[in-house]
Image 1 (cartoon, rainbow, N blue to C red):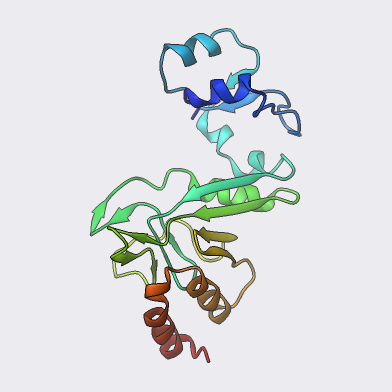
Image 2 (cartoon, rainbow, N blue to C red; image 1 turned 135 degrees about the horizontal axis):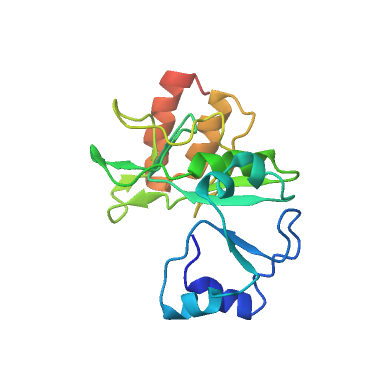
Length: 194
């Protein structure tokens, strides 16, 4: 999706698309959503191309650009590194979108990286967004096997290729400090972390 903000970024030279292997110098999207400013900018602009979603969000297409970085958000992450990006309090909050396609496309890209970024807490720091494990019925949007990096305001956990114990340790380190001890106790019981 392309929205109004991209117009200012292109005009300021922040977005150039010059380093793309596939579709260099072009903005590729499935749809535009914005104000008259965006639509006037895009109208007959050869630097903006719209393609079907099954092309734009195809991991094989995404991976053709070197150094691809995907940044997605999450509602919660468990200590195994599983990501829930669609479900809150036993209610559907959003759909999975194509998060997993961008995660996979970026990690298949030459020198690419996939990032899941989220704040460490919600509800005025009363609830950790890094959970011990998901409750029954909570969907996994992105599996632990696909996750590359998880980032909170407390740091970065590089999970790709790590064991369950290593993942738990890294995720506890980037959880909000007031939840770390409880997470650590549960992880010691489950994963035998010393």
